[in-house]
Amino acid sequence: MPRSEFGRELSVSAAPAQAWATLIDVPVLVSWISVLEQAEEQEHLARYSAVLLDRLGPFKLRADLAITLSDVRTEEHVTVHAEGEDRQVGSRLVVDATLDLAPSADGGTMVRVAGVYEVSGKVAAMGGGTINKKAEKIIGEFFANAEKVLGAA
Image 1: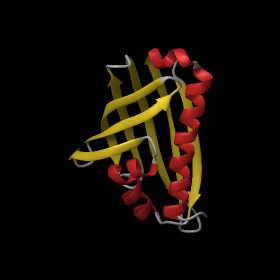
Image 2: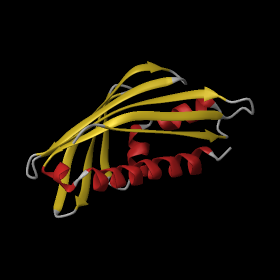
Image 3: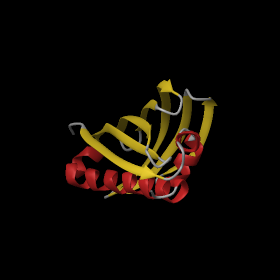
């Protein structure tokens, strides 16, 4: 399956420092997404792990994810790379994303997330539409929780 792009913006009432503290807390973010669990910090602002558990059509996925943060600029920007493989199903997931924060005139923060994801192997045979629908659900969960925790602006 070719790489699929995603991106979304959200204006929140939280100040940039508060938004940053929440949005770089990987275990908290993992708790926001229904298909992820068991987040562990291995090195602060650098390396984390989580487990993806999901069902997609006839496939029951379980992939250990390695998550790395790079290009960290406090309260402004971070690049995230996550990848994992379910060897039993024979599928692989790779996500590359950026998180950008900018102060807004009202004291809140503009949150921008953009990136690409790629699913390969047997699960990719389910088709791009099915995978994209699942990805949109995950992105929606992330932003709904960000809005709830950081306040809608």
